[in-house]
Length: 229
Image (cartoon, rainbow, N blue to C red):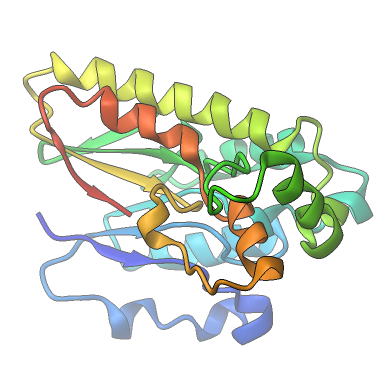
């Protein structure tokens, strides 16, 4: 099967939802699109974009990014509230699937599974500790002041990685699942990080990657995972 992939659309900064040209950019032969988070800073606006995509694809699969939660503090909400909203809102459109780590969808023998995955302050260069990375995050990243964390991000990271790993374990003995695509917003490997050898930057790398996601790949004993996006 073929699927299209998008991420970090940031439509409130780059364009309104009507400016996302799903029809024009859709690849020939692809009836599934995966959107890996950070559609906008407002979950309601993000859902408008998802619904727009659903008009042009048979399947729309998405995870939330950190930016989906940026209106929380101003609205008196938290991350759990936003995830609950996305779960319920996605149910209103039949061909939309919101991946939160506890669920998956199988299309033509391919299982799509994932979640935001957040970050656990363990993927920065080894000379910078957990404490150093998290302290720099608090001072420099808007997540800390905007998102309304009801759990620490590293708690979400471990929880969601554990949940995805359970889905992967389940798939190992399911003969109808031939391949697996893992979808996260947060980087699942240190290979995806940009190390500049500048302390102020490299310390913050701990807030871009989820080290705990390694257990997801360890659970894939039958090597069914073909993509991690």
